Length: 336
Image 1 (cartoon, rainbow, N blue to C red):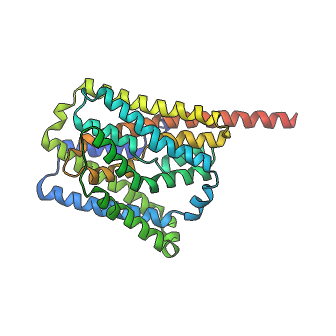
Image 2 (tube, rainbow, N blue to C red):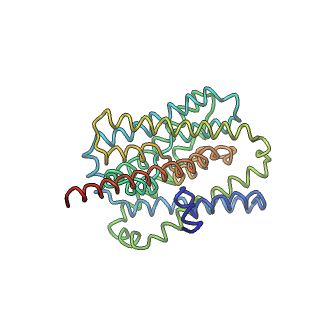
Image 3 (cartoon, rainbow, N blue to C red):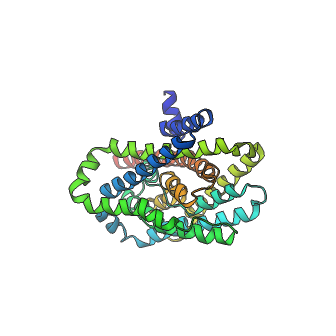
């Protein structure tokens, strides 16, 4: 097994390495002045194009069909937009005195984000779960998140003495929701082409995130905020993130069994209900927290994203191995 394959089994892929390289580049060569404005402008265009392509390739009929399994979809929704925010609110209440206010915002922000799309579906497929239901759950989560995430952000930040840009919801609609709707409208004509040329969507997806990360961490370097994060604070932050992920995962498994969900549906609840989207979160953060220390605010999300990839990759591979052993046992039983 190659080094690359070992890293991928741990959830560490080329994309993560590119993100780390982008952070390192921002540390060595931070962009500033007119160049920084240019990078922000370019990233806004890339984000708009990203959600346009997402709208163009999303099969609306599959989402509608998945709604039939309403119990599962409701449970995923509750995990993502109710349980997670409550846990984040509780953690920030306990540890707010230990963290910079922007890190507190970042923890709350992680709590209100929608689920991942590609990652959660991939983990469900690997673990032999209900892939069709996962596609529906992940897609619905991101559609709802475009509206609900800013609303929850405003509510939670208000209760914690914070605030967001007053025009943030409108900006989200213009930069994210409007391109998505336009992509859906044009889907009959361009949808097949977009699905066929997956590399175009991949480049836009990854490229937009890298641009925003570079811009955010460049601003952080120029402002000198990284001198404010010591090893104790970082360790406590990782502990909070790990506890958040563990509580939701354990809770989703327990609730899935209590509700009598099938094994395939419990797998969907586990991976779609416990993951948070970096692809949606970073663009939203750049709009919701315009003018604030974005690099601080997205740091908890970046840490959570990596932790969820590692944990979910290990769990999904374990489930796949167990399913394979069960298949072999069944086959042996039939033949005898």
